[in-house]
Length: 372
Image (cartoon, rainbow, N blue to C red; front, side, top):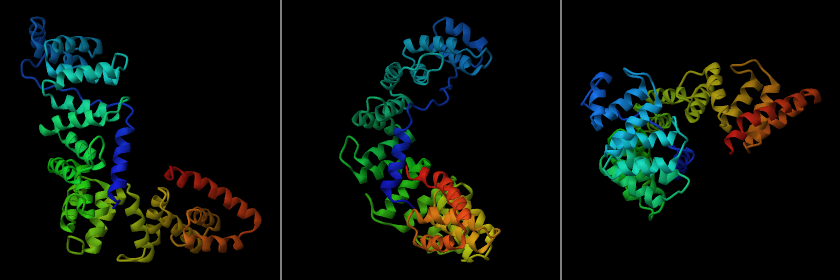
């Protein structure tokens, strides 16, 4: 499992790299009327909820034609009466540029209007705009996340914890980060559950506790989180916080590998190649080693080269062997360097040039993208 700073840095990049704010489905719950026929007379009489519902109907094409212009007009009528959900939806429309020029300033103003009425989702959006917008302001982000988080808004709890974890606009405080991660994790936020495990694994804001690591990663793993599945597998493999079980370790590594996590793909590949805790199966080993190698795992690239040298699970092929060994050697794998130099002596000049060309192709595909 990655160390805390690497994990959190990846989460920060995910947030900062948005380039805009997400545009979720519009809020739709309102009991005043359920069809256009019911809502239209109420809306014309100035009923804000009916106006809001008509807007939603035009957004989705329910009972009426899909029409973003009419939707926006009905939301605007309701919003001007102070209807928070309509104000929020106008914020979403301006942020996404749905039928209007994208305008984060107008989006911010409508989110602000809804936020002042305590609408948690709007407060979260203000936090996100402050966190990752053009005018980045971590203090404002923390303020709005906190308002939404107090109302139980799970994603705001997670983002607030992240701010305390990284010390963004506030002193770094692992205990406060843990407090908010815990709230989000208890509500099923999968990334919060993963980070809870990382905190307990590293003793950040809490005492180290292997049982708690396993417990939180298991919760995330059961939600399909591939890296958590990898962590659970290794906990079973080494008996950390849970009774050792090779069978369960293989089950969880397989789940993680099938979900695309390179660490588990590499582990399964090496296990099947060496016959470690499983029946030796070179074809199965090649299947997983290739997937991991294509994700930049150096050890798997070296083992693939070895498989092609010996014809284990694949036809013997020195060109392929050299191509994989060379890119692993370029990343300072000592065994790969030795094997590559041996291969050079086995290849005639024309074959070596062809192998080097193939290796350069693999380097651009399976090394460079993972070094950025």
